[in-house]
Length: 182
Image (cartoon, rainbow, N blue to C red; front, side):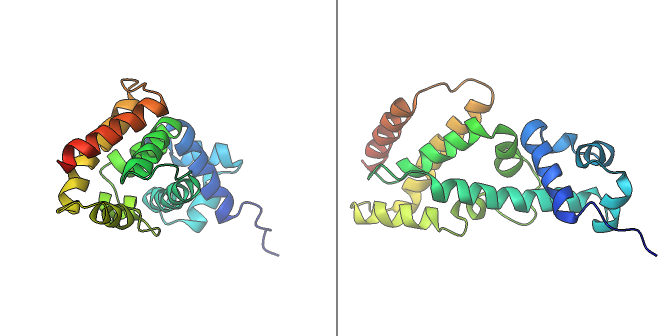
């Protein structure tokens, strides 16, 4: 009679995601993951071919996690790109290891930075449309300028070099938008 499977693929993935969230994806090794999941390495390699496949599954789960984070984030501001900017920066502040894997890491499993941010919600497209409706002649170019600021601020938060309040961040984003709008 075959042994009963007690550690499921979902359990292993959740353990790997939790480890990534707490310590970063580079520390998710087979042995450490097995210890976190409460099993040997055998169940891991029964459901995943190798650790690369585990990391890709964690990446996909993290993409979904970010999309849920953004979808549930309050959209309190009318100025284009401000809601997106505040959410992105806050995600970096709250979930630094997940942010690093998605938006700073080199392994994106075929997804561009644009794909990751735009996601299923079409966040970038909506913001570009808002900018066009606001009278912007070249909203794509405006997005690129705003994005350099937003991404830079988020990356600075990873090192502790960005410690502005949400109110100060909103003010800077609005001022940047107005300046870039010309």
